[in-house]
Image 1 (cartoon, rainbow, N blue to C red):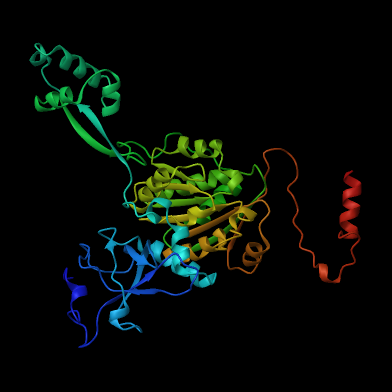
Image 2 (tube, rainbow, N blue to C red):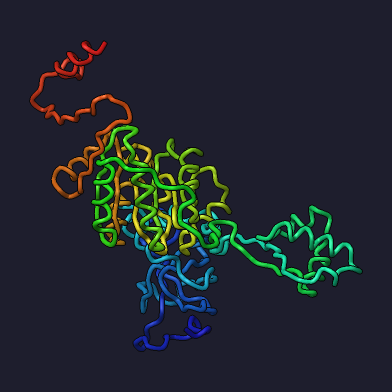
Length: 432
């Protein structure tokens, strides 16, 4: 795309009299796109859907997303303003764009507001779409006698050798050494810098597992074998299991099978369920990068996780409701734990249900969907009973208590006392 495209009466390939227009989604409650002329300088990838742009909107500049390109506008060219600048050299992930457009249509919400909700705060503010990095200084094998006349450099080299996987520059400074001494060692071939990402750094070789999988009972093994039948296609399953029946172990072993293929797993948990113990269980099982998205993260940390997932470095992403909008480079499965939980529903702004978006997203990607619960929602239970979902059951408890019995009762023709059926009142009295 020519750098001077917006200064021309028409662009190459357009009909005579036509001019290129970029339709941009902006943070506005209006359910419409806004027309802009291209900026004088085009990004390296050319103008295309998914690019973040900074545009004049009223008396201020805002960040929006290009949704489509057109060869003209309902407004005359003279009334259109030009985009200020493209913020990235490439578009936002295509799966993220699709999910935002689906959510905006399904929930009848402004696409611009939907995209603003779905991206990290740093991206909304116009910061680069890049995770943070740090530089590690690695020791290199060399003859230490060459440092005989440089005692401080010799001390620094000894310190680096104590950290074969590298030492950050700030740690070097904390030990009383200077950057000039580091550069002198580098020039002599005793050290070299290596830039790594702060989030989801890749492990070096070895097994996927940091600790072995647990043995499965018969019901667990049957459920897992059903999930393995169709790892490469849309396969919605409802895993109904009482508390303590081992649903999490099935999640872990499903993730293991997908990680072995280099595929990512997105695990949604209720707000109350994302505890340090939950994260510790996942991180202690796998040697692959496991990241978490929750309200306790700072804005830079949230962007780090988002970027690690978008680029495929993070193979396991655990998060609460809003994590459903996390882009995945190599999607393998979506798991929704406690799928009945009310915290998956957003009650203001973009009023979405993360479980329902998980269903739509799994179908879009063509990947397995696993909904887990001890008390499934009526919606999911109905789909399981009608065959839309595969119904997997775990009835065995860790103790000798008998399994809970689930019974559906049609209340339309039943007389109730204080909202309760006679049978329920009788059962409560007998228990008390």
